Structure formats: C-alpha cells, structure tokens
Image 1: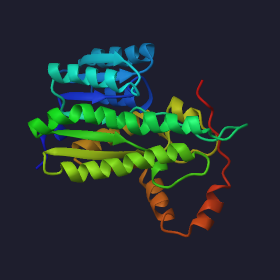
Image 2: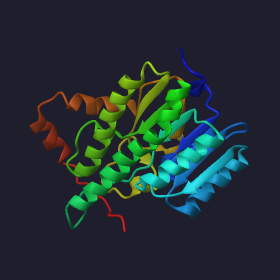
Image 3: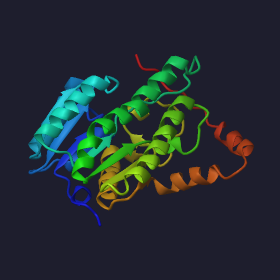
Image 4: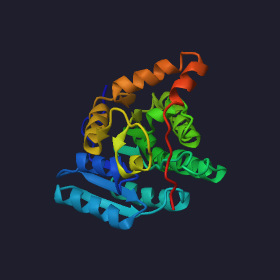
Length: 263
C-alpha cells in the first residue's frame, strides 16, 4: 500500500532550501494547499525561495539556521510538527569538498563534510521521526550522491560522507518498514548548481536543478527506495565496484579535478 504522504504530501520539510536542488524541490512542491517548511544557512537566498513558493500558493514556514546546530534544528522541527504534522522530510543540506589546486583536502574539511552531509541529515530525521512513528505514516528522503557509490580520488571526504548516508538510509529503511514509514535514498549525479560550480574538470551528463527536482519528486511519489540519476552514470559506477580496483583507479585518475575551498 502506498501512503498519502508518497502520492500527495501536504506538509513537506526541506533542508538546504536556500539554493540548488533544495530550492528547486521547494518550487516543485509549491502549490495551494501545501505547507512547506524550509531551512538554509543564507537568509537572503532562503527568502528568495520562500517568496517564490509563496507566490505559487504554498504556505511557507522558514528558519535560517546551521544544520550542524542540533539543538536549534530539533527545536525548529518541533515547532513545525506542532503547527502542521509532516508527511515528507527531505534531508537535502550538503556541501562539496575535495583536493584543491594548491593543497590536499584537510582533516578539518573532512570533519566538516561529515558533520553537514551526514550527521546533520541524521539530526533532521531524528527530530522528525518520533512523531511520524506515532502516526505510523510518513516518508523520509536522504539526498546523497552518485559519489557515494564509488570512492573518487579527488574528493575522498565528500565520497565518504555520501557513502555513509547511503548505508544509514538503507538500514533505516529496513528498520522502519513495518512502521508505515517509507525511506528513500536519492543519488544525484552532476546537477547544475553553485555547489557543482566549485568543481573543475569533466562533468558528464549534467542536469538542471529543476530537472533533478522533477525526477526526485516523481520517484518519491512512486515510493521508489532508490532514486539514482542519470541512470547511465549510476550503472557505470555500480559496475566499477565489481571490477578490479587498480584499472578502475587508473582510469579515474586520468581526470584532473579540483574543488574550490569554502571561505
């Protein structure tokens, strides 16, 4: 049985909604009769997302905060739940990372990637899950990356953070299967966002943020447990994990990629 939260959610929370895929998802879901709870770090960019969603007819609750602040994030989600119980929670907030033009990725950068890309998603879902379990209805989505399928030498910390998210989501899906809660793992490839703009080098099969959001929304509506795109790149990476590591590493290392560090 597919729950209403999958087919037609009326209350949706999205983290990382101030730009990129998060803003595009807010636009995809915005319509009369829906309540969106949106958060992002940059208040000005978040307001732009809020204004667009409001113009489309949605009721919008928003809060600018750092998803690493577990107490603040949990308190805000509690406020949202008290106002409009959540049907769908999309843990989307994330940053990129990797080796730079003039320096390798630092341990501090790896820690930051783990905190934002993995732990903050756990905080988000952990805050929303108890009420969903009491209602025995809901859907949660973890936005990971195709980079979590196979480690890439130019961005080890990023790949690790996204691979952890895949494993966590899969475990949560099995745990919650009898509680009326659907769990999806989203694996985007190259999406044309400011985050991707920080990466140099080849960017095969690039998609617009709006197209990515449409694919995600469609996959969630159909209750798909894994939403990976573009499919060709996904299966190529999956196949690479079955091949001997040395030749795959040799091929991947031919592509020089660097990542611009965050200020």
